[in-house]
Image (cartoon, rainbow, N blue to C red):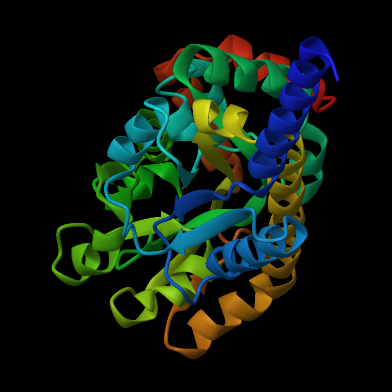
Length: 328
């Protein structure tokens, strides 16, 4: 055997060993969110982790952390931008702090329900925003498949119009799009972390909060609030993000598994929340809350007032583009 042939064989053998080791390398993701273990999203993330581990033969492992155990969201997002192997359930309002156009998705009355959500997810406009988010800020969107339903006002004071809502302090997430939307309803938006929502109402820091009925049930807000004001001001979609640097370090088959299983679990969670919305509402009523329904409020006045949020955020032209994609 010639020296040249021997060298070639050795190189090929070394390459085979390298590829085998790469194939067996284990990748890990710590994925966090602010919700409790009782909520549908957490259950979906657990299913996601189990299915990813199974499909990847254990090569990709996801550990799920509820109740903001990974820390403050802004800090976690910055860890991702530096390439850390962490992921997070976020929302368009917070992503709007990087790519401002995202904020329009949490403007008042943009989406009228699940059908609008389905049409919008995967649209060329949103895909363009996602690409900018990845290229300019290092955040990779894994899924848009998680919709939580309508957000309503839960409060200890009654309001049936934007005028009656004046002066009522409503907890919302501390991001500009959230604050602008709640203020546009006539309320006084107060930014508090999700984990402080219950105590904030109980101690009178705020008069109420705005959130989906599924979350209101999971957080037992019926213990500290009296009224459900069915404003339906946001049809809430959530976004799962990871570090773009970390994601791009994965083999292509693991990237595909991660995204496909996240989408699958998200669609299941969305369907479950849609199916259970009436039951969750009835649960709150059965536990002493009074419903001020959509039909009982001046919903046209709320919709009209809500348009101020787009002016505040400077995204009226972007809203027009989204409306066009929705066929309005």
